Image (cartoon, rainbow, N blue to C red; front, side, top):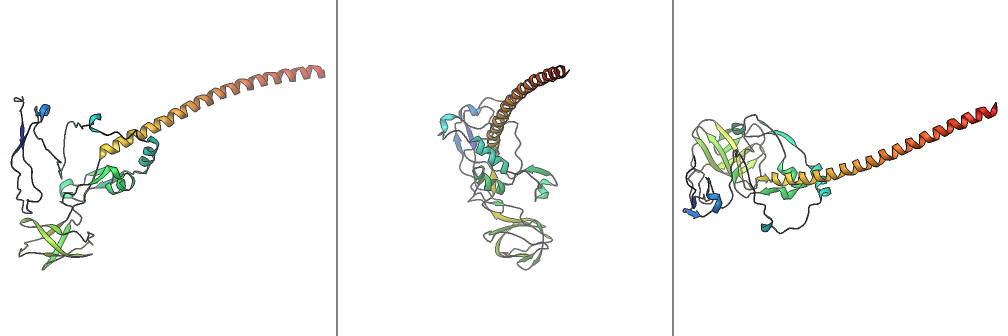
Length: 267
């Protein structure tokens, strides 16, 4: 049972510049905004982006698509869209972070591949995230971590997320080689076995699956037009074939009459 509709909704924001690696989050002052008809049964109202590193499960989604908020450029070229769609590939994969995703298999697209073909469907959020681009145990020799498998990280990566027996620790990267990373321990004493998760990046790519869905609709419409054209052509060919068969039947009947006449004349 739902309570009375709220007349306004108070929400909190988290400042990415004020938070700390230790997990201390700084909130903006309370801010109240009247959200009109969305007040009814609304649990969360965000005046900005919502980012989650985990699964977001919803029963329904609804996107603003009103003509009045758009400057229309024109109709999409369905032929071009079909050509783009044919260049996209679907990939089978597992996520590197097995602790979060396990061995689950996915069948989706890869952002970098889409970016090379249909860049408007790919964005770089600019939000800093740690990614599992190392995800292996490490041996420590002072401030140097060495790895059994080569590590391939960007030179501009500045921070490293690791785990020891006390939990998560963020360290500043000082040097990188194919099999080692030197960090600034800043007086920290690491305990027990070390697991290195990965580095912090600010160019993590996201894919606009709605854009791909619309591309698919346009390409499907182009295929529908091609099918209709083929069906029309097939109809004409069938009619022509019937007419040819009828003509052939007439010729065969005439030939039989001529052969019969010729045989009787020879007698």
